[in-house]
Image 1 (tube, rainbow, N blue to C red):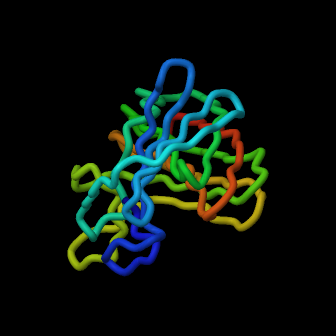
Image 2: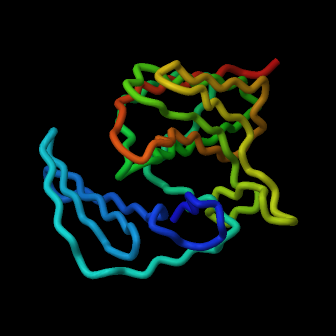
Length: 191
């Protein structure tokens, strides 16, 4: 659950998302103001149905759980590209990767039809959450970010990523709509 109100409590803006593959369609469960909404997507068609409320509780010092949805493995001296969508009902896509030796890193988010942001994070305390650094004694786990407004491309670069596991996050910051995106990742050995 993401604390959209940034008030250390849940509100109507807060929601938790769970995506599952249901045969030939994708299902999203979204908690909003205590009601659990399930949406099924097949191609461009969607249908919704309400279910019984479900309580979801996460520690209040976290921006949200780091989802293990796109496990890329090792990215050493390689390029990878992805096309996907982020939306109000699925506002974050996580791409988890590791580097086995020091690597220069570049990521570009392009092809946007609405605003989207790009974050490079590392779970320093290995708690499975993206810590925002707003809690005393908790380190901000965001290494780099690109949050240009509108449909401008987002770019993140790092001269050296030390060996370890990282998460690249594509985030949709709006409360309605969606955007397709193209994500290009590139690593080369650091000097």
